[in-house]
Length: 140
Length: 281
Image 1 (cartoon, each protein chain N blue to C red):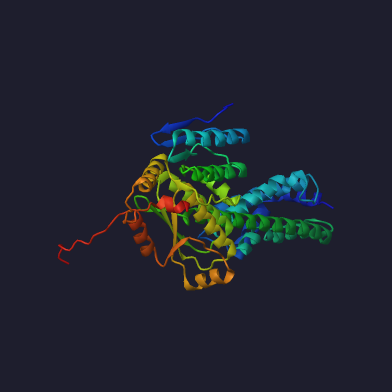
Image 2 (image 1 turned 90 degrees about the horizontal axis):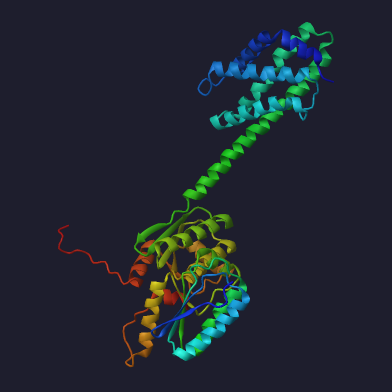
């Protein structure tokens, strides 16, 4: 049994990869850990890789939404990457479309999106070119 | 009830009955293009032997175990015939034409022919009906197989560009098929890591609430995985229906044609196609 899901710090981003079946206590611990780490490291972005997650229930779905909301308040962008088709179908059937959470197909694309979004936020001059990413739009 | 007389008569006069039966079948018309005389002869002989063996053990009920070989034989023959393209009456004639030789036999040799003819005709009718049932089962199997293979063939996911998938839907959509489409598309998105998927419904004649709902679910699921969906080729009637039904398409992007959707997809990917003006046309 895994006690904690490791949260890795990479520059100004936090990475976490869910590779075990999530049970409820694990999810609650993860929420607490993540909020604490975002504040401690002043993280600008959080990337959640769920490509190994094969089973999902409404609790996990809500937990993802919750993490996203908390992170947003703490000024960190959240992106969920690598969701499996079966998981996506289940979430849709459950009516959890994760409104407001950005998604990407894999870690690479997710990381690129994070960098771009955070860079845009950090730059002082307003940028004129409309350089949006499709996966980011998909999450809106 | 059973006819031990018929059983013993059959054993004595088997070649004669067989010859008469084949002759009767020939008179009714044998499909020479589908089956040859020898096969007819062999099938008839096999069935006749089974029939006589079952009769010898007594019992008119086809449920009895001794009829099992005969039923299996009929199953096999009827299903093969339904696949080969025999008509139902041609299949039934095979069994029913056995009546004539049997009645002749009974009339010639039995003491009380009418009674035996009655039990025999009942028996043959049952066998005939049974062979019809097998024939229909064979047909249904063929239809089901075709449906399945159509289902597989009808949901190709094609890659238009690196990162752009398209799924052209043709024919009416039901929940079952939409489910398969959905899974195929999502699976392909994962495999090819495509950012954009175009669902083209030019070939879909009608859309009802269920189908619209399924399409929306597909779009949402793709969105969750990090891909964007564009729906293209909505016909005027379908657009009217969707609005009339009050289906909320939300922020799903729709384009009038696959070409327009593709152009949008390329723009999203920051790809520009430039016509080569130097070439002399």
